[in-house]
Length: 285
Length: 226
Image 1 (tube, rainbow over the protein chains, first blue to last red):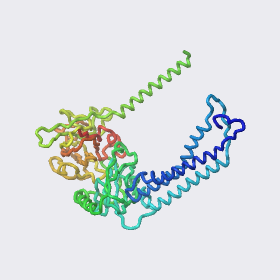
Image 2: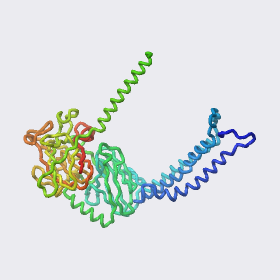
Image 3: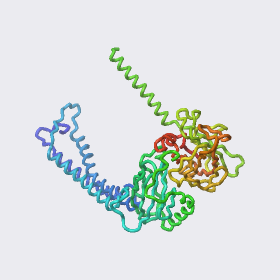
Image 4: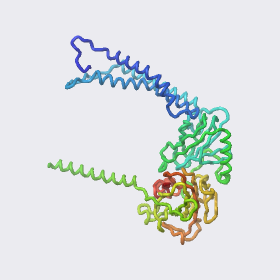
C-alpha cells in the first residue's frame, strides 16, 4: 500500500524487485567492510592461537549476520517510506494473509544459516581443542606435543596458580612462556567461578571438585587481564589480576625465583592434585 | 467521591507508601557503609608512618552490631575506643604499621598457600613478638589480605585451651586471651583497595563464607590510600 493512491491507470511499482535490489547493493558494499575492516579488529585480539581463532569466528558470525540485519533494517526503512499512511488518512490496512512461498523460503534460509553455523562451530571447537573454553576433565581433542601444565585455583575472591612441573609451587600471579602450549587445569575451592583471561581468549568455569581443562598457546609477549566471569559474591567485581606472557628465559628466571620465595610454603601445600576437597567445610573442621 | 473512588485512592495510597518504604529499606541496605577511620600518624618517624590498631572477635557483640551480634568481625581502635569499621584511610607512599589483637580461635585456611606472609616490610609478621614468614595453615583464624597491594598476612588463632577467652566483642587485650600480630606494609600510590579475610570463618553460613564475609564492615573492607 503506497502513501497516496497511484493515479488512475499508473502501475504500482514492483516493490519486491526494488527492495531486493537495494538490499543486494547494500550487502555487496557492507560485506567486504565487515570481513576486511571490522573483522580483524573484533575482540579478543591476537594474543594467542585460540584468541585469533575467536576473531575469525566472530568475523564469520558477523559476516553471516550482516545480510540478515540489512534485510530487516532496509525493509523497515523501505516500508516506512513507501507504505506510510497518508496524512489525515484513517484507512484500515489490508488484511494480512499468509504467503506460503515467502514463509517457506524464510524458514529454509534461516534454518540453513543456523544449522551451517552449528556445523561450523562444532568443527571449530574440535579443531581448536575447545577454542579456549573449558572442555571438562577429559577433553575430546588434545594438542599433540609437549605442554606446560598450569593449575588455576579459584576461591572467594582470588585466583592462585600452581605449576606441577616446578615442584608444585603456587603463586599469586600467572606468568606463561610465549609460543608454548599451555594446559590449564581450572578448579575451585568453594563456589563456582570462571577463569577469564581476556586477551588470551580463555574462559573456563572453575567448579569445586572439577578439573576443567583448556589449552592455549600465547603467541606474543604481553600483559593480559584475568577476570572472574561468574558472579561469586561480594568481591566478584574485584576478582581480577594481570598475567604476563614472557620469553622462555624470563619465565624460567621467574618460576625459579617463585620456587625459592615460596619454598617454605610449598612444603605445607597438599600434594598436587587435579581437584582439592574444599576444606574446611565447617568452622574448626 | 464515590465509594469505589475512595477505595481506589486508598489502595493507591497504600501501594505508594509501601513502595516508598521498600525503596528506603533497599537504599539503606545498598549504600550503608561503615565510617572511614584514619590511621594515626607516627610522630618523629624517618619515613612517613601511621598506625592502625585492629582486633578480631569471634562475635562482634550487640554494642557494635545490634542486628548481627554473633557475627565474626574486625574492629578498629580510634581515640582509645573500639569501633566496627573496615574502611581505613592511610597516606600514600608511606608505611602503615598494623597491630592486630586476635581473639578468635583457629578455623584453618581453605588454601594453605595463604599461610605465607607476603608484601610486608621484610616479608614477615611478628606473632607475640616472634618474626614469622608463614604460619601453620591449620592454625589460621583470619587473614588480612589486600590483593592489589600484594599484602597477605595470616593471623593465627587463640589455642582452645587458653584461659579467659573472649566470647563477645569488643575484647580487652589487657585481660582476655589473644595473639598479637604486627606487620608493616608500604602503601604506594593513591587509590581504593579492597581487603578481606580468606579464612572461612563465618560460622553458620553457607560454606562459612556468608554473612560477615559478604558484608562490608565485618570481614571485608577498603584501604583508602590518600
